[in-house]
Amino acid sequence: MGRKYMNRVLVTGGAGFIGSHLVERLLSVGCHVTVFDNFSSGSIENLASVKSHPRIRIVKGDIMDLNTLNEEFRDVDTVFHMAAVVGVKKYVENPLKVLLVNSFGTYNVLEA
Image (spheres, rainbow, N blue to C red):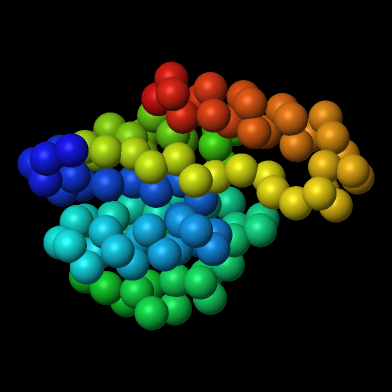
């Protein structure tokens, strides 16, 4: 993918382990990054090294909220979808919720 398509990037789940490392890399190559995360499993601590960076914007939001996704996706060139409910324990405790969030949340990201 050419750089011209990656100036303004949004990362869903950007406060998670993988998402936060992606955010660091995107900032290091000059991207303006919006982190979109509900912080249910991700943590602001994962973004400690970059949360004051001039090209980062952190938004608390949920991929189940299509209206908020539409607003946040309006001015971005590229989206990396890293948001998900993760972990065997969460799946065992509430499999329907995990399946709904991971499937319909991804659907909302694609629709936005």
